[in-house]
Image (cartoon, rainbow, N blue to C red):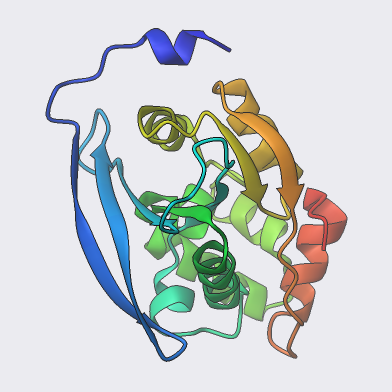
Length: 209
């Protein structure tokens, strides 16, 4: 688990700034850190909320959020991505110390936007999300958490409270050297469009929902 920390990254692999946002009627100023990996598409954004005077021993609550154009931007009802992102923002901005690692290249559990829409079309014909991914020649889940873990360690967040329903994500982060003190679920109510999607995540991918 210590191998990840020993890898030297380029000096220009990260940049930071401040990011003022409007959320739930509040104006908040967050830290924004961008990191890039070995390829141009491997980029993550880490937004951090720290309350004034927060104790250095405070463990951060962290959400690793896979980018979802249809959900995060257009508020698609076929998934729960937008609702999970909003719930995560609520948790991290209410916590003394919290962060969201936003991973754009995780679109469609890592298969990309085009294949995700292909898979949606197959779901329209009756396949579940697992069957649809396989039918378009894609893995069920091809997400990698290497860059996310490197970013967290670089930011001094080697031990976290993980905001996730996905035990596989917890295991993957642990394998990359992140210590998980606690896993906190985010459960959002289903709707008629995503009920089967959520049931598939629970029954076939062991999500704790």
